[in-house]
Structures are given as C-alpha cells and as structure tokens.
Length: 193
Image 1 (cartoon, rainbow, N blue to C red):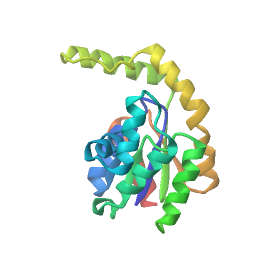
Image 2: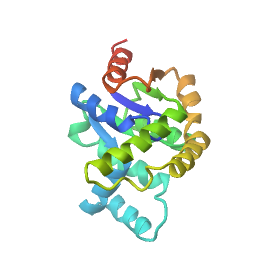
Image 3: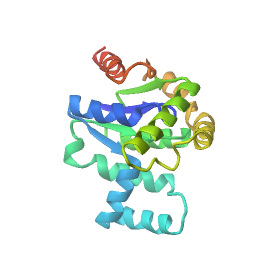
C-alpha cells in the first residue's frame, strides 16, 4: 500500500504516519529524513543534496525525487510506504506520479487530515508549553507567527493537491480535529473500504 497524508502544519500527519506504519507494517518516508540519510550514506544523489544544503539553498525537486526513487527501491518498501511531507506542490505531485509509473506502481490513497486553523494554533502553542514543562526546548517554529507563515505557504503551494488527488479519485478526508486514536480509526476505515 502506497499512501500520502496531506494536511497543514500541525495537523498530526507525522503522528498518524508513525502509528499507521506500525499498525500496517508500512515504512514512513519523511523527505527530510531521507535527505539526511542519503547525505550520510554518501550516495550520488546524497552528495548533490549535500552541496545544495551546505550552500543554504533548497534541494531541487529533481534531487528529492531521486532520493525517493532510491529509497522506495529498497526491500523494506516492498510492502508499502507512507509519504510524510511530500509532495508539497503540484509539480512535485506530477513528478511523483511519473516516478511511480516508471516503477510499475501507483498511489493507493491520499488522506487529508482536515483541521481548523484556530485549533491548530492552540495545538502548536500547547505543544510548545508541554515541551517547556518537560524541560525541553520547543521547536523554533512552534509559535503563532511561524504557524501563520507556514499556513500561508501550505494554502498557496500544498492545498491545490487536494483537488489534484480528488480528480484522480484517490482523495479521502478525515476529521483531523478528533482525538488521535479516533483519527487513526478513521484512516483505517478509509483504507479498509
């Protein structure tokens, strides 16, 4: 099973992807983690990514697709995977479709975690408070201003993917505002259908 979880920052995509991966025996693929692993492994595509990242630039779609291509070819992805944080744009979605076609496969589902922006803000602020209370340091982007900036980028660049995948008949939406376990149950129900 090959899945994408969509939703704005703070919607719980990472939390749900991790739990879903455990329940279904899938591999959770985070583009950030894959980039760091490719750099550390010194692969050809990892060396290209490292050069861009060291110069402070954004890694190109071509490099990211190359890293995804290498990663999904590994044996542990044979049973399926969940893409967490990719694609972020229509161009990336089209490139992913082409990549999967060349590998003789397609996405099985795209699940949107629908959330309320005001509730997201409360979630992010609560996460920062809990991190501080536990003696940790909150993420630099766990604040109202950073969230607003990230939400603007999401609505401008990523939310068009909802229509893209809806047109392909792959999109399902779940209530991302429900408790974590309930959201997981909704995702399982979508995948069972």
